Amino acid sequence: MKRSAAVGTDPRPGQVRGAILAGGGATRFGGRPKGLEVLGGVRILDRLVAAFQDALGTLPALIANDPNAHTWHPELQTVPDVQPGAGALGGILTAVSLDSTPVVCVAWDMPFVPASLLRRLAAELDGVDAVLPASGGRRGLEPMCAGYGPACGPAIRTALSTGDLRAIAFHSAVRTCILPAETVAEFGDPSTLFFNVNSQDDLTQADVLWRRLASSQS
View 1 (cartoon, rainbow, N blue to C red):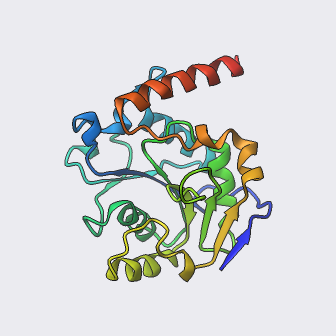
View 2: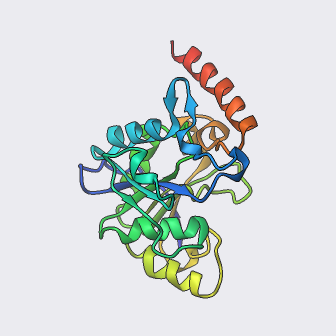
């Protein structure tokens, strides 16, 4: 079931958790962890940690399978996938399984997700199981920058049991709220908000976007 978003109230610290999804190996980066790439003098991972702290008042968990992940940001709780080999959906499952409170998840290769959007996703989780922003991507939604409640866990496990690894595979089984495009646009251009760094060319483009944003804010 889907509904459009209404204006929620900001969550208090501890009401909603954060999780950064590190995913698998970055083959197009020669195996280098994507979130450790530097943009504007700051690692992408550190940008996201700061955004989560600002939005939710707590440190996010880091969902990562790399054996060295615990060294990337020692203050973070680092957890491997509970169901290895399940791709992005496995990362979401791990995040929702850590605690009984809702969680906002962001892929760690998205350097431009602002605290204000994270805060809005968290606020909209009241009364629903999943909150996803509309995007210009192939799905029309962005499941890798979204909020998920505990009811998503069983629904994801059911999807995985059928071999469906799509990040949106379980949506029909839970109460889903969509942040409409006009609402998402209040936080920035969706093509920038959800820009993800998958290659060296992407990192170069991200640097251009970062300089443009920095110039507009100065």
